[in-house]
Amino acid sequence: MSRAKLLADLKAASADYATAQRQFAAERFNVQHGIAHNLMLAESREHVAYHRWLGAHEAFATSAPKRAPKPAPKVSAVAPRDPGAEAVADYWRR
Image (cartoon, rainbow, N blue to C red; front, side):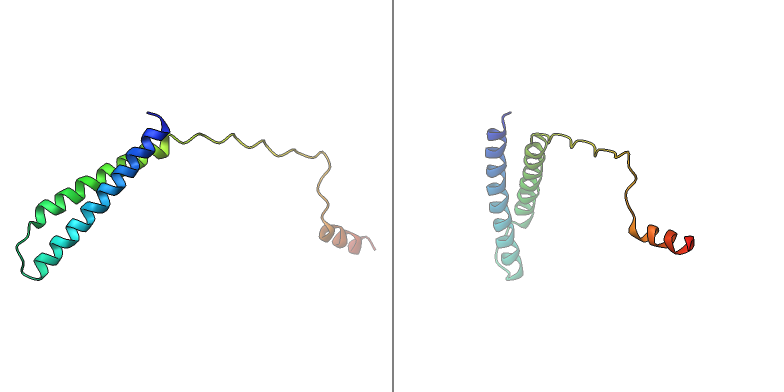
């Protein structure tokens, strides 16, 4: 699939998941207030929507273009200058 289709699928899955979360919250409210409810169905829908969203997100993330590797740092033939070590060496040379 192209990245555009994967992104569209991810957006649809995100919208479905948000709807399922709202429905689940509404059913929990109904349970807390003694109103007729179908909590198990709402929980199941929320669970399925979450896993669909998770799969769509993973598919979109793995389709991202890979970055070019960074070039290795150049190794200098000259040792780096350490002023602290030079000061200690000068002190002991006296």
